[in-house]
Amino acid sequence: MNESEVGFGYVYLELRMALLQNLVVFNFWLCFTYGFEILTDENYHEFIQFKNKTVVIAILVRNKAHTLPYFLTCLERLDYPKDRLTLWIRSDHNEDNSVEIVERWLSEWAGLYHEVSLEMQPSPPHHLPGELGPAHWPQARYSHIIGLREQALAFGRRSWADYVWFLDSDVFVTNPRTLHQLISKNHVVTAPMLRSDGLYSNFWCGMTDEFYYLRTKDYEPILNRQRSGCFAVPMVHSSVLVSMQTTQADNLHFDPQLVEGYNGPHDDIITFARSANLSGVPLFVCNDQVYGYVMVPLEKDDSLDYDKLQLTNLKVEIMVESYPLPVSDLLESFTSVSQPDTLGVDRVFMINLRRRPERRQRMEQCFAELGVQAITVDAVDGRELTDAMLEEMGITLMGGYTDPYHKRPMKRGEIGCFLSHYSIWKKVVQSGDEVVMVLEDDVRFEAFFRQKVEALLDELKSLALDWDLVYLGRKRLQEQDEVFVPGSKMLVRPNYSYWTLGYLLSQSGARKLLAADPLNSLLPVDEYIPILYDRHTEEKWKANFPVRNLQAFSAEPLLIYPARYLHEEGYVSDTEDSPQVSLPRDDL
Image (cartoon, rainbow, N blue to C red; front, side):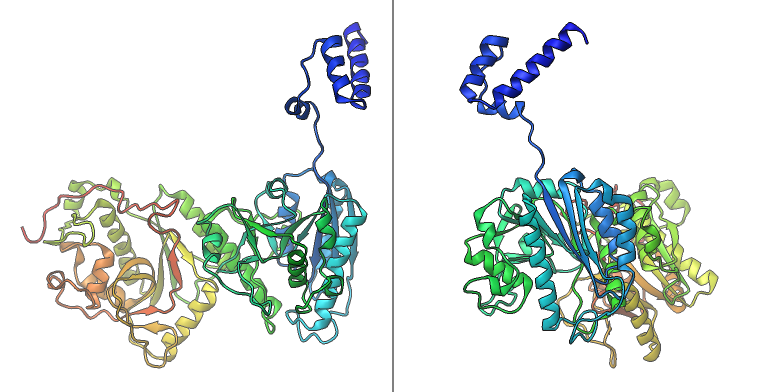
């Protein structure tokens, strides 16, 4: 040890001793002994490094083998020191291999956490008294959950934890900074807002006098993050961080018998909300960042297989805005992948521009989740189309065409889009396919897409309809009611509509679309199709196509929607964002 190191050692020991004394004395000692500056509140906190808060994460697991690989992967990826975290895990009455998955994960990760409190029931019984199935909630089940949550709260108090985080095992915390962010809000009770594949979330904005859910005008703006921040609400659940550092937290309970003046139902989350309300503790939900996602709860008669379908819905929905749900190599073997097929049609085509590889990748990931075997068709890129190329193809623009909204000629991107669909129509005729599905690469799939397509095809078959084209997604341009096909629950006769996001096409439909010779009087494809089924409003344009006998229908409700709409963040249009063309027109 050299002289400077010895000197530093003495300085360190004296600093330690001084910190135990009056701060004023310490300031003088620093200033006169070593020439340090006077210690203020600001530089004191720079000088002293505080440890991260201790957190107990309370996790209940029951029949969640399908969500656990993703839940646990998100948990392990939290950007928070694991030695400051205690895992409190309880699992019982499982019909699946939830226990095996938890044990496998803990075999790898348990040693990194401060402590793991684990109680699991790996064997029958599978049901509590009075239960009729895995999604049924009789009073015995509520009592059981109430007891477990109250135990977790008591465990947090006994272990002097700074926080207890109640985290359901069908929640996916995809933001690794979530715990840091929630703690920084400095509230007694804080929940990160979680999205699902619909309007469901982990908070209420309203509650009736009978303690039922009440939808208010504030709910959707918070859910859709049109208003950003932390909001006091009457109910939070599924992912709730409770600060144990306040005296008010001592009055928080899940057990109705422990809440003085409680007059609500025998329900854990409602009891907790009322205990907070009666203690003057506001419940906050925060949407200032995208924190993660939550599964839609099962109804009484739903099966575990149905919940697996709901997981597929959510995973596909997540990919509209984010990366796919992560799963670690350790747990990947516990996930299932659907064997791909063509959804009951001959072929599924997906149109994609080569310069949009991110869209191609997202669609391929969606197809993998949905179990769809699709053929990617390289779109004709309008940016690369020159007037000379178009003239060589024999393309003539429709005389008198201007965009109905922007009052401009066609754009090269619109020509490229038309030619992309046109190439598929030719493939269908040449191959002899009876029915195909055509999808563009910027679509969002409706929940239970596969099941709804199968039901739609069954209806087309059972009704023995003479059909050529069925919209799966479109934009209605007229307010008039559209009539359901007699005997159908899913099909209407469409009025004038825009978009070619996705559609079913028959062999006869492909032949009719080609037979009208559209390249000699070209206009955008989503104008052309309504002309051929004779629902377009522009008579002059219709006159260019005297045979208008395309038998078109539309799914109702629709099965696909745009991934993003105009003015939404991330919206890109390769048709609008392209130059106009000045080709010969058929009226010149």
